[in-house]
Length: 101
Image (tube, rainbow, N blue to C red; front, top):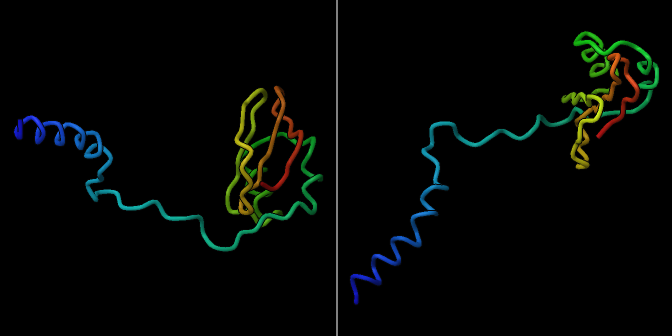
């Protein structure tokens, strides 16, 4: 009976072992401090063709450190991040909106 209890406890703890890390990759670093996004002036980019170069310009203009592109029909999380610029574009790759968050 004691052996069955020990085996039962071992089996219950087995799934928890799958959550353990090996220490190879380490923790993911949080976003860099600062980089608070500002909406001022982002309307000037609406109507332009979405490109990597335009994205870089928009990051610089907004002060954000992260750029998220929103393709047509793509679902996006609603979480707010002060360091992120979200840019949506249409089927013709034309920017339809640019906003912080």
